[in-house]
Length: 76
Image (cartoon, rainbow, N blue to C red):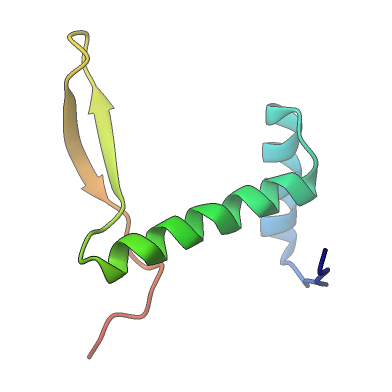
Protein backbone atom coordinates (compact mmCIF):
# COMPACT_ATOMS: atom_id res chain seq x y z
CA UNK A 1 0.00 0.00 0.00
CA UNK A 2 1.44 3.43 -0.92
CA UNK A 3 2.38 5.73 1.95
CA UNK A 4 2.44 9.51 2.22
CA UNK A 5 3.99 11.97 4.63
CA UNK A 6 1.93 15.08 5.44
CA UNK A 7 2.71 18.25 7.31
CA UNK A 8 -0.39 19.36 9.22
CA UNK A 9 -1.15 22.57 11.04
CA UNK A 10 -1.55 22.21 14.80
CA UNK A 11 -5.26 22.97 14.39
CA UNK A 12 -5.81 20.18 11.84
CA UNK A 13 -3.68 17.73 13.82
CA UNK A 14 -5.63 18.47 17.00
CA UNK A 15 -8.94 18.03 15.18
CA UNK A 16 -7.77 14.79 13.56
CA UNK A 17 -6.64 13.40 16.93
CA UNK A 18 -9.90 14.42 18.59
CA UNK A 19 -12.03 12.99 15.76
CA UNK A 20 -10.13 9.70 15.81
CA UNK A 21 -10.43 9.41 19.59
CA UNK A 22 -14.18 10.17 19.58
CA UNK A 23 -14.77 7.56 16.89
CA UNK A 24 -12.43 4.88 18.25
CA UNK A 25 -10.24 4.86 15.14
CA UNK A 26 -6.66 5.73 14.28
CA UNK A 27 -5.63 9.05 12.79
CA UNK A 28 -4.66 7.14 9.65
CA UNK A 29 -8.20 5.73 9.38
CA UNK A 30 -9.64 9.21 9.93
CA UNK A 31 -7.50 10.49 7.04
CA UNK A 32 -8.61 7.60 4.82
CA UNK A 33 -12.25 8.49 5.55
CA UNK A 34 -11.61 12.17 4.83
CA UNK A 35 -10.02 11.30 1.50
CA UNK A 36 -12.90 8.94 0.67
CA UNK A 37 -15.32 11.83 1.27
CA UNK A 38 -13.23 14.06 -1.00
CA UNK A 39 -13.39 11.37 -3.72
CA UNK A 40 -17.19 11.24 -3.41
CA UNK A 41 -17.43 15.03 -3.60
CA UNK A 42 -15.23 15.10 -6.71
CA UNK A 43 -17.15 12.30 -8.45
CA UNK A 44 -20.50 13.96 -7.76
CA UNK A 45 -19.22 17.39 -8.86
CA UNK A 46 -18.29 15.86 -12.22
CA UNK A 47 -21.96 14.86 -12.52
CA UNK A 48 -23.05 18.43 -11.82
CA UNK A 49 -24.06 17.70 -8.22
CA UNK A 50 -22.79 19.08 -4.92
CA UNK A 51 -22.44 17.92 -1.33
CA UNK A 52 -25.20 19.20 0.94
CA UNK A 53 -26.27 19.25 4.55
CA UNK A 54 -29.65 17.76 5.39
CA UNK A 55 -31.78 17.55 8.49
CA UNK A 56 -34.06 14.58 9.14
CA UNK A 57 -37.34 15.25 10.92
CA UNK A 58 -39.38 12.88 13.09
CA UNK A 59 -41.20 11.55 10.00
CA UNK A 60 -37.80 10.65 8.50
CA UNK A 61 -38.17 13.30 5.81
CA UNK A 62 -35.03 15.10 4.71
CA UNK A 63 -34.76 18.84 4.27
CA UNK A 64 -31.75 20.54 2.70
CA UNK A 65 -30.25 23.10 5.07
CA UNK A 66 -26.99 23.99 3.33
CA UNK A 67 -24.40 23.23 0.71
CA UNK A 68 -20.73 22.46 1.36
CA UNK A 69 -18.55 24.91 -0.57
CA UNK A 70 -14.87 25.71 -0.75
CA UNK A 71 -13.66 22.19 -1.48
CA UNK A 72 -12.87 22.90 -5.11
CA UNK A 73 -11.63 25.95 -6.94
CA UNK A 74 -14.63 27.40 -8.71
CA UNK A 75 -14.16 28.49 -12.34
CA UNK A 76 -13.64 32.23 -12.72
